[in-house]
Amino acid sequence: MTNRPFFHLNGRDIPLADTDPTESLLRWLRRAHLTGTKEGCADGDCGACTVAIVESAEDGGATYRAVNSCLLPMGSVPGRRVVTVESLADGDTLHPVQAAMVRCAGSQCGYCTPGIVMSLFAGYYNGELTDITTEGNLCRCTGYRPIRAATDELAGDSRPDDAFCRALHADVGGASDPIPAFHLPVSVDQAIALKRDNPQAAWIAGATDLGVALSHGQPVAPSFIALDRIAALRHIDIQAGHVLIGAGVPLTTIETQLAGLFPALDQMLYWFAARQVRNRATLGGNLGTASPIGDLLPVLLALDAQVHCAGPEGARTLPVSDFFTGYRKTRRADGELIVAVTLPRRSGLSAAYKVAKRQTDDISIVAAVFALDFDQDIIAHARLAYGGVAATPMRATAVEEFLLGRTLDTDTVAEACRRLESVFTPLDDHRSSAAYRRRLCGSLFAKFVQEHCR
Image 1: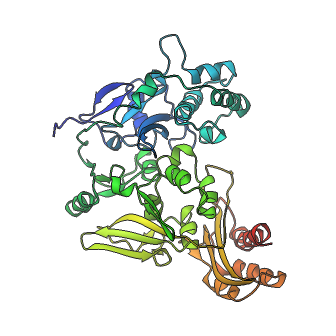
Image 2: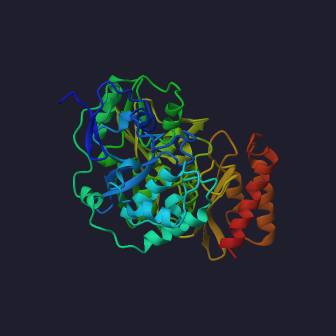
Image 3: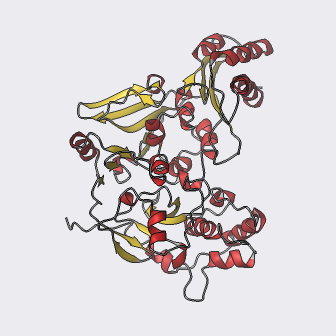
């Protein structure tokens, strides 16, 4: 142990002694006069603060990932490699991404431009140059036509063997001591032991939820136990009858490795926040927060997921249908850690729907996930799961029972929709009225039947 935490910033080793572990990387960069990284919302919504970090790729190599620096606490960066917009140009020679933005007139006021450039930078090297590359970057004056033109131009270019490519052949990061009060375990057993010795410490994974509170200076916990360096939590095991997903697997990885296996999961991930958030957010984090509007939780309910936990008393498995006990409360014990989720692979039909004020990068008004299996034309298995309509994500079990043994004729669908509109007691809030949410419970099921069951 060196007692000298550091991270790699734009090719240089930067010491982190006396750094506040809860300060965001964004605020740290701006105090260091690297003001190309802009502060817009400080919530992970606008993308103005986007930087690139080097992370392990699915093929075992390394890749650049665009992340929101406003959500990344400094306690998470020791040993990490970080690239900001200041390092892209080589003297007076612009990086190809910057040059494409200039040629296509992709900037007016310029405030959002560095974040867009960094999203495109990551996509340039990891092979993702589509509209999704910049979906987490808001631009209010230029408009997206020239930005899309720059993206298309870059997608047609060959990648040079430049310093940024060569940097990916180095280690993902270096061994660094943690910043005090921010533990960095590398195994599940080590994490559980740290929690036993520091019971007031908070688990933190991608920090896309807790990072918002930290970004706004809200007290969260006296210390933290980070989970993003535990290899055992970042593993996906695909079997003929089921898939096991490590709790620390970033959603981007789930999106690519499980594409096509679970249609409802594919559809919900498409609308889940934005690329920068999915690059850090984890399945275990979405489960652990137990938010009633957590987008993936209705998916897990509809697919009959099993939640695997580990703690001082050993390991245990819970059906996700029994996991949520109240508003942001679960059956996970204080000292336990969510380590994985198992999804059974079933035949049948499934689909996910999300209604929000914005199509992407927004909180659900209502999320609904449906899964039906048939024996001939008779419904043999039914799961109707919702988020945003109760204190917890819930299944409409009474309506599921009503559907079993029936055919999806017009009368059955109409009665199921009528019952779905009276099952839940949602709240009125600034996003929607309770009456609208109730109507959505029925109309989304009718939409599912029309689109997938006719």
